[in-house]
Length: 103
Image (cartoon, rainbow, N blue to C red):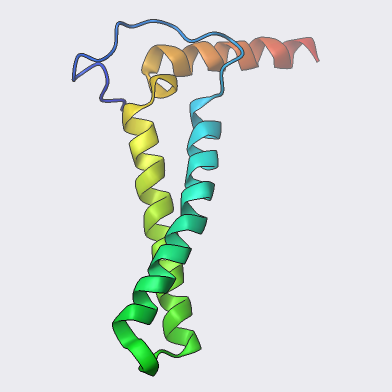
């Protein structure tokens, strides 16, 4: 699903074995951006409603911000990160299979 190859940004190189897996990178980025999105949308909700803001409204805006920003950032990582190119995902999966066989 990575767009790097379609856009010509990739040369098909394989990542080093010690690099992070695509799924780990997506979870980490989504977690960070969910906190930022919650804070940003909380501020936007307070600006939108002004003195009429209530706790449920502010929480609703913050939760929408957290969800939307985590999904968006995870998708962007999946589309544009070199770790998420097909050859790197399969190389990491093969490495995981070998380490599981040794245990």
